Structure formats: structure tokens, C-alpha cells
Length: 221
Image (cartoon, rainbow, N blue to C red; front, side, top):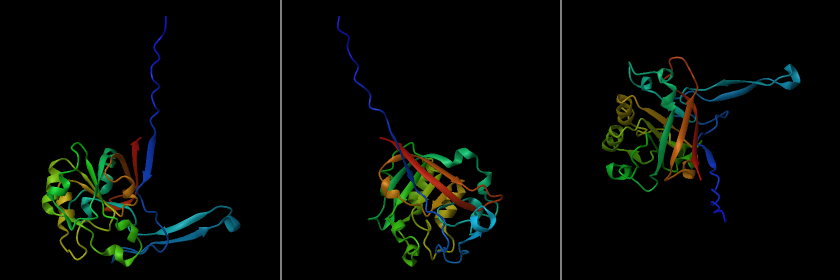
């Protein structure tokens, strides 16, 4: 009697992509923000161990903005539960858009809780051109996404609002839903058009308006 052999299942492999910029001495800060200064405090030669002293703002490099950044009684980042930093995220290509309207965001699949916007601005990192406005979300598109349950918005640029804006309407709109904002993302081109598992873990700072954040995307192949 012959036995049927089942076809071998191909082992699934996880791909991990770091979406963060590292924090480096002399990084160009957002206009008006404190500089990033990192210096050697102790060395192997003198103290037998290495230790660095670091000084930078809470919105340096890749970071999360929380409602308390702009809202008088808004929630601080440390008040959010750990589950707030784990999402299913979709990366939308916006390089060829003048602005990001309702028609563009309608292509985002249902069920995700985070959207990352790939403008290509990461290639301008640490240059003055980085602070030019990328394609920006409209209030209508932002509202549509918030009503669909999106609670984490990510950008590979310095802001989701125009640099010249004083009111920062998109920030305020997202914060009104207790949403969070990721800024200064990196490597989004490696996950564009994909739905990924996203982990965005900020430094745990007391009463924080924001914090540098390590952001990792993963998906199966």
C-alpha cells in the first residue's frame, strides 16, 4: 500500500525593518528646538569603562508626539498603555501628491490602526531642505482616517503640518481623538504598499510631551 506524501510547507520567514533615525551628535534640530550634543564622559583608558553624556530635546530624531505637546490638558506620552505602541500599519506612497486628500487615503486597507506616509523626505535628513513642506494631509482625509479607527499617524518628515503654521491643525485634530504622531521616520520605502506589524516604543519619560522612539516594522514572506 502506498502512502501519500504531503507537500512540504515552506517555512515562513519574518523580515524586520528599522524605521528609525539614530540620534547623533550635531543632528540638525527642528527650528527652535535644542541641539543634540553627545560627548564621551568616561573612557576605557581613564575610568576602565565607557559612558556618554547626552543632551537633546524630547522631539529629537525619530519620535512620538503626544497630546500634551500642544493641548493644555492633553495626555502625556507616559500615560498611554503599552498596547498603544503596537499596531497593524499600512505604508502609503505620497511622493507624487501635492496634498493627501480623501481619495488618496481611501486606498488604505480596512482593519489597520496605523498609517505611515512615505514622501521620500528621509533622503533630506540633516539638511535644510528637510524642513521644506512635504505633501500634507488635509483635515478631511485626517478625519476620515480617525473615524476609521486610525490612532497612530507616521511621517518621514519633520511635521504633519506646514512649517509656517502656528495653529498646527492636523496635530490638534489627531490629538482630539487621543491619537499619536510619529515624525522623522526612516526607510519607509522598504515597506511601502505593505501592511506590517509595527512596534513604536518611546523612552519612558515622566510627564512627557514626546520622546525619541525606536520603530520596527515586521512582516512575513
